Image 1 (tube, rainbow, N blue to C red):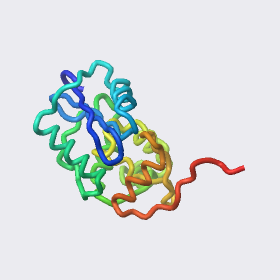
Image 2 (cartoon, rainbow, N blue to C red; image 1 turned 60 degrees about the vertical axis):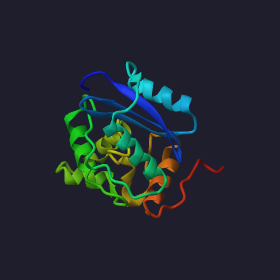
Image 3 (cartoon, helix red, strand yellow; image 1 turned 90 degrees about the vertical axis):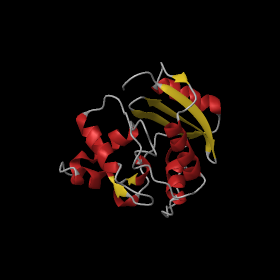
Image 4 (cartoon, helix red, strand yellow; image 1 turned 90 degrees about the horizontal axis):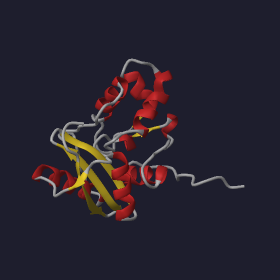
Length: 183
């Protein structure tokens, strides 16, 4: 990350989200959680030295786009500059590839691996990159599914159910997400 980290919380139709940034770009995005304190705690866990600040016009525009996204408006984040910090080179390649996925467009972990010319045996590494994605929504990890279109994991608040809801916002039909085992 480059420079002082700043962050701000914001309300969406899905809960309270947060964005973190440096002079180089967006460095963190916390997807909506039920409470502001939960979101702030998550943001400061990722960016412990960040200070809460009023966003610049550019960051405010990204916040506005995220608010519109969670209200169900078709919104793209292709032009947003990100500063994801130090990442393994393979993760950076995964993030660059996943950023090309548009509204309602999905792929699988294995397909991302094949697109990067590393073969489907690297699907697990793609999943690890998605699980540690510092800027979900902008790097749309929710659009990457498990084999056969299964929802797969999701490390954001609400887990796989939140992933399914985001995809449904985008018009992607999803099978019901299993919440646990029925014994």
